[in-house]
Image (cartoon, rainbow, N blue to C red; front, side):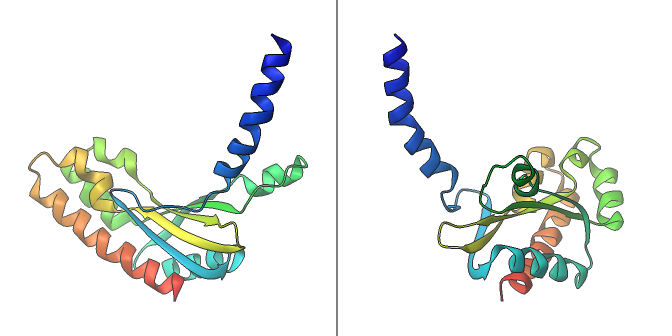
Length: 157
């Protein structure tokens, strides 16, 4: 049994290692923007594009630095939560439950070739479960779609 476990690990580990560094792929409800920029540059450009918009960086988190402190090297990975108080108040007026989704996040991943990709779930996709015919929440989500798209374009240019 022990040898079977070792054999399975020997076969599965290279597959797992290959998938954990795979580049982001398009999926329903997501916007994916591959770039030629290095990871750190795309992070800085995304933060700069948010600051130039009517949104604000609310959170930033990523496992890369903490992993490095533990002696583990992983590709660059950063989640940047973005929102503003005007949108928060307006969303709360429509759906208390929908605020669990704020801040909405940009996701920056380092690709296998050293470039980075900016991805995010579109705000309309994020808020869709809370709409239930709520036209005003749909309007807010559409405004956020436009704002997120503008930030993404500013970051990847």
